[in-house]
Image (cartoon, rainbow, N blue to C red; front, side, top):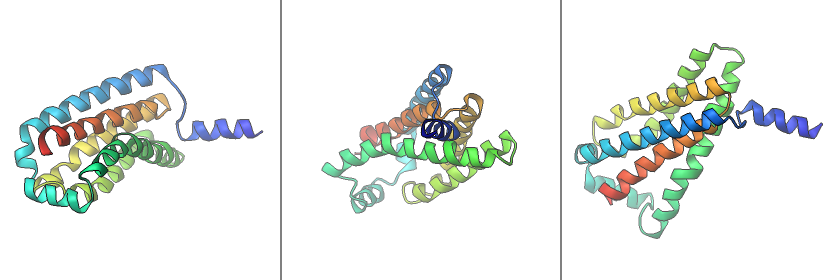
Length: 175
């Protein structure tokens, strides 16, 4: 009985392996990584006010030895937890009473709204507002992957690679 309950719980939040989903997640994540890094390399002087950005990261203790730990958390732990919540739990909960397109749009909307709070202090005006659009787009892609394959592993991989792209911009152009 406990084995079935455990399998049902894993399936409920989308923790089921699907080979094609892993491939599509890896490919979409690699594309996100490249686009983020390329865009960051071109536009970082406009997107960030370097002095304000550096002071903010120091206030957040995102400097020195602590930065290594925070980078690791942001690249690996954070995307896993966000995917478990947004494309795992919330997606499934909303899917019980709504159509798939509505579920994908709602989870992407609230996911991007949640990220708006973190990008406001990071980016110069008006870019912090504009940064919500790529987050919303990523949420739609990851929500579609979740719906299409009924698993979150592909969106987890894609999300991790996107966050690796963000950290590469930070390490190459902002430190």
